[in-house]
Length: 204
Image 1 (spheres, rainbow, N blue to C red):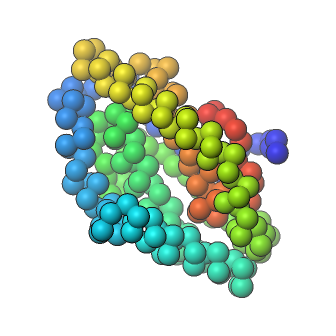
Image 2 (tube, rainbow, N blue to C red):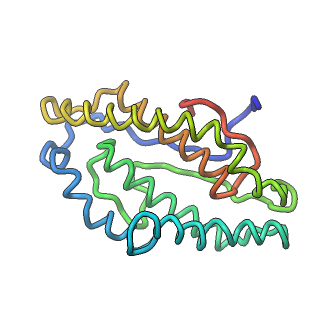
């Protein structure tokens, strides 16, 4: 499964080489409520299970059908999915205290996520989306533990920011790496933007 070259999803967050806003960081979960409500409305209004069903029905399942029967991935649908993933990623970065700018609904800000548009007939196997979820299971298992570790690191960083105003660089890079790993798996098994298997790596 080893691959060479850059994976067809790149993700970076500009390190805040300055003192972060301690009040915003200390009350982050409360500050994030409006943007979290927006995401809840976008994905379904009646709880996480309905949100997951809405995401599957609106974003993933139609792409599977289009690839399977037409071997096409309409550009507008791809762009919509990528923009929604960017918004989710900005919110996630904000919740993990990586930046203290409030997440924009449309601007890139300091969270950079790029996914090249695939040439479906040449680059995407029309049958592979049926089994990608199964092929990605090893990643999902590892990510359970990595996401827990990233949450613990973010909590420790929360205290560091409150006392020093700084996000320790090693902790910052680890959380960004875990987010990058998650996003690569999403691009492969959910966004269906590439058939290239994600690397088992936190590195760019």
